[in-house]
Length: 51
Image (cartoon, rainbow, N blue to C red):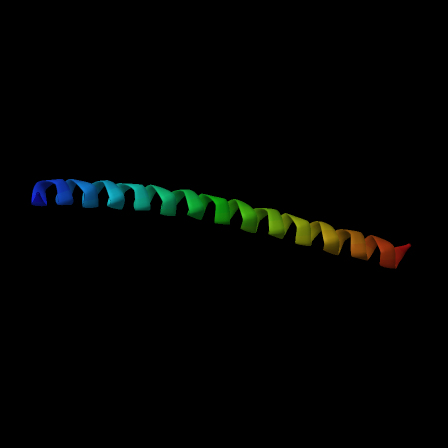
């Protein structure tokens, strides 16, 4: 019984690590997109001020 429990815990740990890694990638991409959006907003704001 403990063998099954250990195997289940190992699989859960593997799945949790994969989910954590996937969420980290999504967060990184979201940060990059937000940064790019901010740059664009600043650029367009300057363009409007100069118009």
